[in-house]
Image (cartoon, rainbow, N blue to C red; front, top):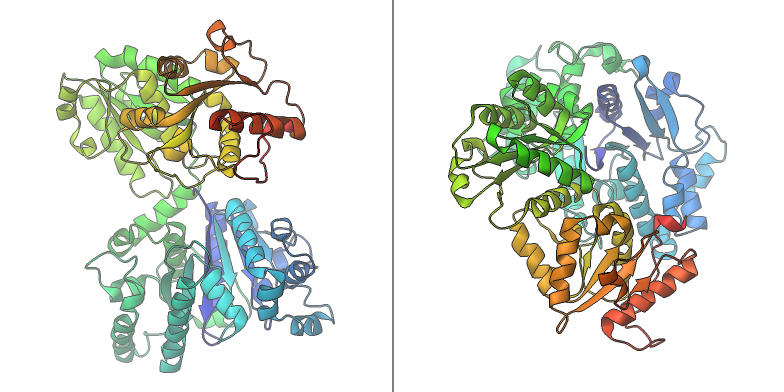
Length: 611
């Protein structure tokens, strides 16, 4: 999975199997291979750890309460405390997950310390909201799924768990009216509270979880309740259920039936039962686990073919691609494929070129994350059709994003695209060179995990356009961030390129609309055809556009660079020296004299080369 998500399990009343569902869902996900963290936020009645007691690597001597106390004592240190009090859980067959318990419950001071927690004071006087945001960021960076066990009823802690903390709220209930009315009221409150948060959050998604439902002995009464509950829960499904789907069918997929044997003690049937046996409780638990792992997407498949949906979720956790890109081509376009392979390598993207053996091509495609297909005017190619069909069929239901990039040799070749690829964004070589195509595709692949990811300005005018080689991307992105902090509008392809952009036009627009072009000149930069083309184009516009080289690494500047006024970072070996060079560059971009104050003063990010 690309980034983690946080799921809160909530129930209005106790005794509905909320912690049972959470613990066993966590076990299923961990056994599939997902990175899982469980957090016991039920501070007043902690119990989640009982499910994992015999699997703890060591006793839990601290947990959430201690984290809250540290946040109260030293506000602003959330990034340091977020993962400090994890307890490893070692499951059979090498599976594992992490647990943050409620705290040192065995400590005789636990209750008195808990009574001193004032949530309103924490937020107003100790900036607990910012601490919680730091915890969220750390949890989502280190785990695929974070499962939070919330306090029942109407409480301040429960409100935090249902509104600020989660991306998804799973609310457990049983088939009685007080449970249903109470939990729906809390969910509505959470939705309203979510909308009022001073944080950037998508809409809260909610999953109704009917638990401990026994319709075997009282079938007719069970069917009456199924219909009633489907009608009441349908509004909570609208944000993610397929249009036209039956709420009753969907709720049935994630209903946890009642099995008397599992009502005794804190047990983990997910360790011993098969997720494919519909006569066992883990069958329903696995359906819920797959739904959460797949981010409530492709739910139509869960209704039509539950086993396939679960299998795909399991496979996605263990997907390990050996290579970034598979290049599919016709026989005539193999030289172009080899050229693209080399250009991808220069941009930090690994690739395999298709061979003529159909069986080997299928094996290669499965081991590559993305697909590039080169299409010319000669018409559809049997092997390419097979490549595309195989790739799309095997990637359409995976939680890992797999992209297809058609590269056509001319506008006429667009008509020859395989049917499955005709709706995709096309890279037309009539509009640019193979080097530009490789750079644009590499930037699109990398945009999912850049080291810095601010929002694109898309303003139409920029103070500076950064030209750089891929090998220097981390250094350049740090420089871009520092320039933005000083108030400059910066164009960097990884920040600005959006899905659906016409890439040559977008890059040309960024280059031509910038007041200055900063070329990050390194040894790799001097070897890149694309950066040299950008430099030459900027040099032609010298009358209306500044061209400022920046020297890094151990580069010896070429004559056409050395003759210009450049900023030399090669000797900036300390933070102080680096900051001075950044400020020198900003003044040059803004035409300010030496030592003139800059428009904005801000903290500075340091590149890895200084550590």
